[in-house]
Image (cartoon, helix red, strand yellow):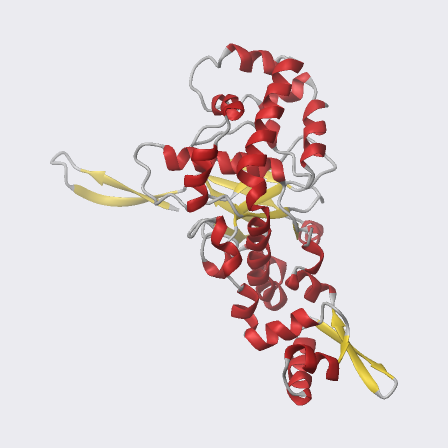
Length: 351
């Protein structure tokens, strides 16, 4: 709901009327809710595109924010070979759909792009930023010109290697931190509560996820939704519905370690945030991390440098939260991470 002011002949506001704001709405079935999940590693191609959008926004006249350190460094290091992307990706949408390849391997994403049909390229390039007739090379690309496609792939690869790859570790840290903040909501309120807290512009209502924007409604048709926190993105959440029926749609939103945007201090500073300690307390976070390797209570106490009684107490609290499990071995016990604890510590995100 938004509000519009009505003015009389004298120019003064006479009354305010409520008008329905245009909405993007995604309808869920119970199966879709059950199949909705997070990505565990950044997708390099969309991250590269979003990094470029953020660079262009920071460089645009009238930009109100303060450029983050990675943006200043990225502008200085911007490779000349990436300049063709400036014809395709502007500071404001809509943006081409040909880059919506969410594979965690960049080379695999490039192979998907090379295998795209002419119809797919033409449809994906229908959303370009430039008003009027696009440049000749972009029109040739939309017609399936292989030489122009390789030009785009080289531009993406060089931009990724220069701007995104050097910050990969901190981007992964941002995703982990965001995920750690979401898990308590998921545990206490379930998937539907989680979906309503991803971003202020998103809300869960009547078995669907809504975001103000254009008037558009769709259903997930049993595929679920892939939730993708982005370390580089600071804009509004974006839906990517793709063209492959077997793949779930993707919702990309700004990762928020410790409750603030990943860009507040630049991605280079993200590793300094310990969201797990902020969430659980430093000692309990250390206990949880120590159990990346199964340990007895005595071994756990020694690893964290606390008393066995304290280790046992922390283990009980973590066990009650379904983050660890405890099994009896002979006359003693052995603690290990559950699947939830593994996700929370980011154990299987390394590499």
